[in-house]
Length: 341
Image (cartoon, rainbow, N blue to C red; front, top):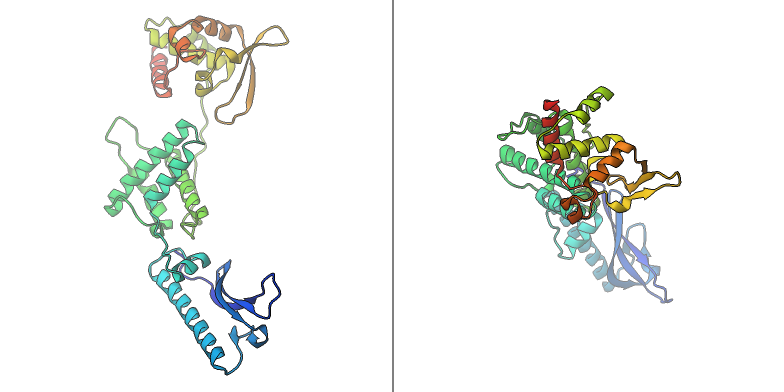
């Protein structure tokens, strides 16, 4: 929550489209840069209105009654503002109007934001990406349990120190299974996903202050290794007696000769293999991650691998160019192949 807000109440007149001797009174509520006007459903002659004081002029009983009513409205608006400050709620002009009208603001929680994000984005993000968000969600739950002995917190608890404490938790978390401790860039990816979920809550006006304003992510630049031609030759020529390793080796070699990522290779279908104007076969597909169109010439070794699996029962059943395998298993088997080579 912000500790201070620019808050103001002012009464103004608004004439309707139909010409009439009287105008409608409105209450203008201003909080920081947000402003709205709420009709008070009271009519007044513009001639007796003092726009500077926001009150009616005169000593007649109906004028005194109107001014007394306006003073009560202003007083109640100020009470609403003070109540929301004490309750540490997000204060906007619309929120004050709702409380004045008896509509109380819901206190949204971190778990609610995460659930809302993952549900909304499940149709637009790739399965692998949304799976990473679920992993981040699990770490947030572990952090809340370890740090606060709770499973959820209200959004107004989020602050710079909350983020720093979460980062510290991730860096020092010791997995009980076979997984390795999270390295710097892994920690930063969890923070990045957490930040995106919080940004959604700000856009929804569930949170008015960004706790990430002063936080800076620090990724470590990693130079990825690559295979030499000699190493690739060793993998291609290695005699593998286990069928699953032969299959994974072929998929990997195919990726080397086409430049396709794992997911793009798995989604290939016979319809993606087209005869080009040059008389040779080409792959025509789209990148799963970027949706960009890709046209790749099929080199002889890549074409030979396609021919090898075109009648494979699992490939025919799935309608793909190759029998499918999960990315996790493929990476695991590739490590086994690397050891054998």
